[in-house]
Amino acid sequence: MRATVLHSAGDVRIEDVPDARLVEPTDAVLRITSACICGSDLWRYRDTEAEAEPKRMGHEFVGIVEELGADVRTLQIGDLVVAPFAYSDGTCDLCLEGLPTSCQHGGFWGWGDIDGGQGEAVRVPFADGTLVKLPVAPDDALMASLLTLSDVMGTGHHAAVGARVAPGRVTAVIGDGAVGLCGVIAAKRLGAERIILLGRHADRTQLGREFGATDVVAERGEAAAERVLEMTGGGAHSVLECVGTSDSLGTAIAITRPGGAIGRVGVPQEDTIPGARASFMSNITISGGVAPVRSYIEELMPDVLEGRIEPGRVLDHTVDLAGVPEGYRLMDRRESIKVLVRP
Ligand SMILES: [Zn+2]
Image 1 (cartoon, rainbow, N blue to C red):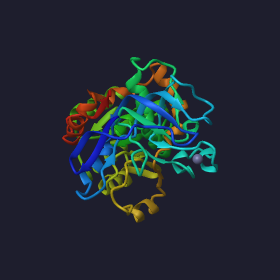
Image 2 (cartoon, helix red, strand yellow; image 1 turned 90 degrees about the horizontal axis):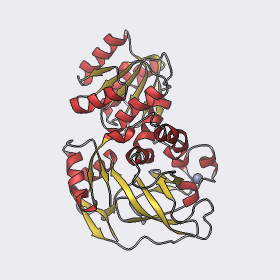
Image 3 (cartoon, rainbow, N blue to C red; image 1 turned 180 degrees about the horizontal axis):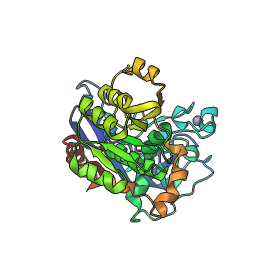
């Protein structure tokens, strides 16, 4: 079968790889019908060292069940399913506590001998615990939005939950990428009335306005912080940090009102959290982390199916498998917010 393989920085290729096949009796094999390229794929795409092992790519996908291990109980051949960006057994204590990203037996796509999702097929470990059935056909008009439940919509939601978004709490979202834009959707869904989006790409912040942002701040760094403090009379109650750099987290701390909360979901690019003293003195809660999106799929799916949210609008380019390398280039040059892959 063909799949996406990263060789070194900027060198991503579509190659023949061994066919996905059942290994454990709890596995499923899916034929991928839709996948995406993620902003977090770009971190690997930009940083990989030349001598590193080739890496399989892709962790957001929808597919049709083609083969099932003998112990899989909840799925049938032919089911259309969405996978979260981490696989999990669904039965260990951490899964039962709602944190499948910390599953005792789980892991992430494209690491070690685990397939990536940007390919023709994928082996799914712990199919019962990992996959969620979709009640639509693979070519359904809602497919792009359903696909975002694998990562960006659930991640934006996790930021909003961590930031304790609720009616009456002024909310700020840092980052106008796919996750930040989904954070706007999530904040509005949880009742935020005023949503300030910090982003400097006019086409993206315009989509943010359509998703529910009431104000846009295009300045960066200290200028952005001053602007938000002025607009809010002392800061936002809830801040969604959707970038992951130390500058961005510093801005988040600077614009959070005393007693407020930050939900951080941008993958940290540094090992330290800035502003330890400032956040301490203002009783700011710094929450968030890698989003347990498997726990959110069933909660968010009805809103997609009934058209209340349209996170699939962040997918502004579509490519076939051969077009995946160009998709990476488009996202790397910020010419696309997020790329949909139809193998
Ligand atoms: Zn588990």
